[in-house]
Amino acid sequence: MNTREDTGDKKSETAPAPGKTASRAGRNLPAAIGVGVAFGAVLTTGLFFPPFLVLLCAISTGLGSWELASALNKKRDYNLPLTLVTVLAPIPTVSAYIWGFTGLGISCVAVALVLACVTLVVPRKRTASRYKVLRGLILILGWVPLTLGISMVYFSTERGWAGILMILLMAVSNDTFGYIAGVIWGKHPIAPTISPKKSWEGFAGSYLGSAVVACIALSILGQKWYWGIPLAAVMVIASTAGDLVESVFKRRIGIKDMSNILPGHGGMMDRLDSVLFAAAVGCLIFTFVLPL
Image 1 (tube, rainbow, N blue to C red):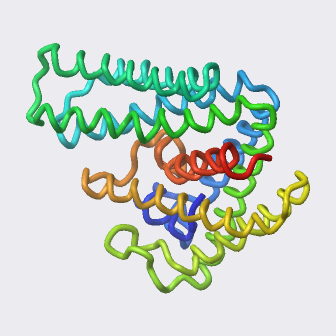
Image 2 (tube, one colour):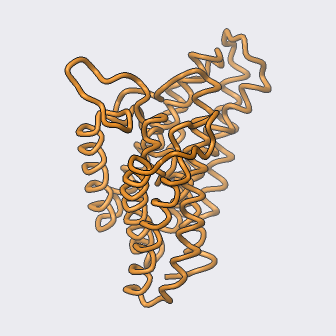
């Protein structure tokens, strides 16, 4: 979920490949649309076959964590154990679906302890201090396994599929309306030094699209439709925060994309940046504030 003329700020800041044309947003738009549609179709399929969605989230957690660890190793010489990070990171996500918040909390702590012991006790050459390495591990676990784990806790509930579907629909409308508004009217950047192509006009478009979807969905689900107005505001703010956090990370690290595994998007984290925050916040709201 993001104000998507801002897709140019990070989803594909790199120049288009020879023979390819970039959109005004600065990315290979056909490839990006294809990946986005495929991703959405897979996620929607998983809503009606929970084991498949859990597996997809576990794979996404592993890949996202690998990308973050790889960036820290390459640019900051943290020398984190990439294979171990990739294998252990999905454990909290799966545990959250099976055992809820208790499983999520215990598994996050357990994985953190194992990674910390292996990283700091086993001799490894690095220039980064132990404090920075521990901070990097906490960043990875809090950014990916924890946020996706929160979504899995809610998905495991009786009507979790409905809330996740609503979040996905809001994400699509957020992307679409934000992109259109940003490209056509975007003139006033939200954070020019962090993400210069993310505009207030795109933000307004994202909010409008999300609010319309939220109001309609809540009405269909038997809830008071007007709760969609503040819900959309919170979701769009969380989405934008996710975008900005990744933009800050990449600028400080000195990279343009987390990886190149997703054509038109970059890496898994380039696709999940805003969704992770928005989905976690939305699931917490549906769990404790606005049960569906």
